[in-house]
Length: 158
Image (cartoon, rainbow, N blue to C red):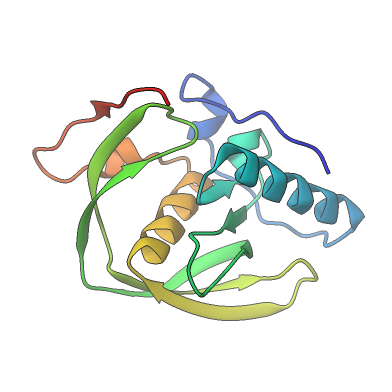
């Protein structure tokens, strides 16, 4: 597989709405592998295809919990509950964080790499990550979800 360049906030593609995946073919399999490698190399917990310049409704997530690595194709949140106010960052907005408001729990449906629909749910960091990555598919970045009175903070480069 190959590493892909992660687009940063200056790139206008991050403001665009991604299109549904309709072909579950070898090209998709390669893209999913590249996204996993890119996420792992960047030491992130989630990556949307738009972040590597592909306007398709594809997300990969691995928050290090019982869900493990997940591929979400054409995902949709079907239920949400509770509220969490936590610090968030983004691979496309390096060295920036902010306190956001997100649901504490989400349930969603998505397709796997073969086009089969499945449902999953989770809470805490997993729920926050699902919401964050699905926002990317609609051209929204975390700075647009800041909690009232919060501002984006610069974080030191590691």
